[in-house]
Length: 113
Image (tube, rainbow, N blue to C red):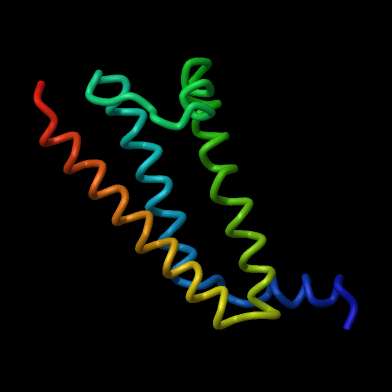
């Protein structure tokens, strides 16, 4: 099968619900980060994203979106070849993201002001 045909077939398949959840959480994280930084509650810890945010909120959102949309698109394409591995990997990433987000939020709440 040609690679072009495989890509076409891959895009006709429904996206994994795990992919949709991970994208939604990443978008909510970006929105929360914008609000928290503007209110002075937090600072962006990622140096690349902090630099983007120092220029504009739009650039921050664009860089943040690129950081997760592009890899998820590649994973969805690779799912044609390794469906179980990709699904488990995205589930692990989803759980890891949520765990790190919760731990970071708890650390901020417990931090003396």
